[in-house]
Length: 328
Image (cartoon, rainbow, N blue to C red; front, side, top):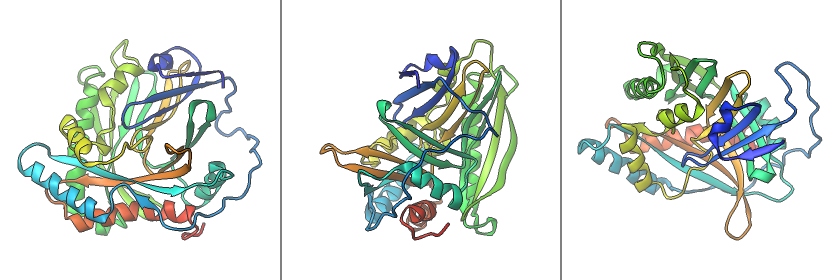
């Protein structure tokens, strides 16, 4: 590590950067001097085995509060304020000082492999994040840009509802509109709509939207146009963010933000949506906690009890692995 900054302009300079952007927009970019490419073996630091967490996890919204929140969003939809809004909760568990998320990384790699998995631990920057994200927020290769929003989650395709497809189509249109702000006219396209994608214990509907960036468009422009990800905010995005601010009781932090890397020299990067993500932090008293977020998109067709059950489903495997209730 050779540099830490909150200036996104660094991503268009030079070097290889890790990026964590909270849902609330706080940015941390870390530049590394040594980078190991794909397929090159790298030594793993020795660490203790993960000690499973015991006891219950607390939730920023309990079941009663979450059900009420779903009802309130449906009322706002009926009033024409918003079409879709994601309601999320942050789960927390005390974390002992010896606990190392690198140990949990090994557990997740075996029990919940993910295409955009990452581990970013930079104590100097206050970062201790472990993600098993299945969702690509932004994939860039030169002028080519792509987003793969996930909307629609079930235990199988047979269990997918009409509501899930409707959620996806709404967000596909939002992402297409976001990318149009920084892409050359006529280049933004939907390459796949509501494609099924299987992950451990879950099936998702995934849409792929791509475009060609206009000359001069840098990372600051792209993130300004697209962040926070539409799949974890809602539509219209500005209205959904107001709903989220009214109903959620604590910041989401890295959850639902962006986590990934940028190679400024190669003009390449992959940023995942920070879902299925653990992070460690400290409360005002200095006590250490492990956090994990879960939530879902609320539409007029949402049934409160079913929406709560979806948040439980999304958390079950990852929290179960951390607590040894799910075996690798």
